[in-house]
Image 1: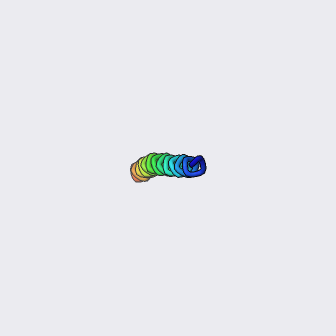
Image 2: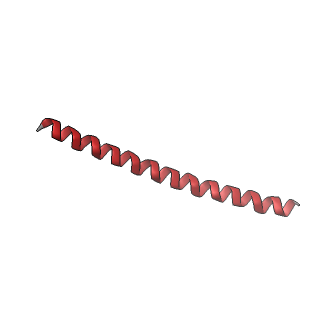
Image 3: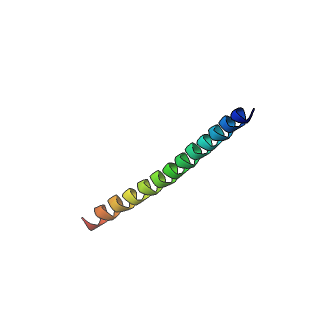
Length: 47
């Protein structure tokens, strides 16, 4: 019984961590895209 509960908790933590990592990567990817977009537009302006 205790072992089963531990497995459930571990699985829940893993899924939560994966979700957090996905959210962070999504946010950073958005930010990265935005900065690269800004850089390219700025670069075009300067040229």
